[in-house]
Image (cartoon, rainbow, N blue to C red; front, side, top):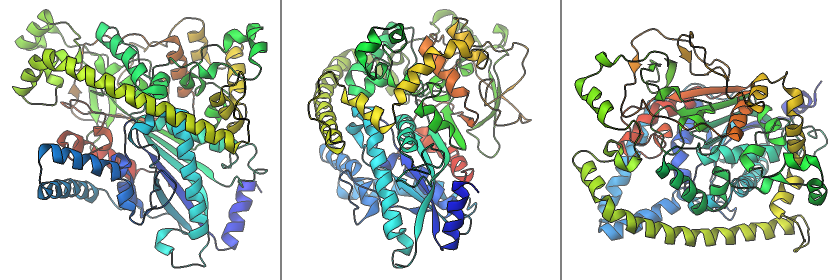
Length: 596
């Protein structure tokens, strides 16, 4: 009998109710309210228990709903005072939003409750609200870990809310699922690595010896519009400027997303490393690259989960483009003539697609042919009024006013980012001091990067495993032919030109759906098709190949036409924006197909 089954038998015989804890993590500049529809839909579908949300200090508020909307409510009040909105107008707006939420929840089917003896408890994390997400993926993950540990302690000491009066009830957290939106998807990948190494999960090699009992089963990981390989490169000068500015104004998180961090390229005796040839393998390594290294604690933890499910936008995600959100080498949805088949049950989810057919020029409208001849195939966003969140003629007027508004906006952004960067550095320093105190380390240690030391201790010298894996890759080419091709400079694998319709899961991942019969939707040149993409960096190609090697990986691609930016739409982030409500069937798919 395995340790896991032995623990299960003991729990059953002792009358312990087992808990499947599901954790939600929002994205950059985010708030728990942004992922609340995901949580509430899951609660509706599977009779879950909503946990009281932790506030930043780790205490539990009396009103659970107040915690997740405190910052948003304060921002609403400021906006209200500026715009001279009355209290009645604010109340009416909130009621309208809640009505939209209830309408979306009404469409979610009551699938089933957890099996007898189990409870499904949902935790919406709150410690990384808004600008706290500037502080780095690793620091944000540590805050999430604290919330998870505090929630486990609360459940096992006081029980779940609905049984709070039953003092004799006993609970144990025995299963963990975790959901990340946008940046939250990267945060959860880091967090599970630490939990895995510390022995909280049954799949950990030290689970049976861990003081953390190692009784929690790794169930499912879900990511929505997550930049798994960072920000893809762009060809245009404007795009390159945005890349540079983005890496500077978002503090440590920006450096990690834009792959200009180098903290994760050294470990152990740095002098010995620099005196050896092996040091060449570990210099200038960013966090995202380290998190995809074969054999690292990050990949072992990710591979230990039964299901790793990725939701990505195929169109119009200006924040997280398709290739990084879907972990793909190419973007077939930018090819002119690509046809897609959507699901009958979930109209904004793609069942299959065919990127091979091109539209002959004589089949295009006269206006389309004229536009193709006169206009460049790719223009900066600010020169494309069709992408503005306004209807004609306001979108054209907005574009014409940019020469006057842009300098002022840039000045405001520079001042604001400088101030937020200062606050972020202060928070990082405070976190460093707290961590050093917790680990009983000296306050000052020469030649020591405490961020690296944190991961080396918390995650069991993971980076050493990481760098050893990189240097051994060329010898493992036969086991990983995709990696071998990329390492040898052959580039990404090419699509077979004779292939027919593709499933949502491409050649680099497991098939997840079958082709459906019926009419197809065709992408035409203009808003979506015909754009030229810059090639992914060699590091990003490696990340794509490594992550797609996960046998437990499945993908779902969304299809939102005529949406300015689908980044918030994929989870119906706010019902106050009409276009984002389109994402309710994607949220419903998540809730109804959730793996208990």
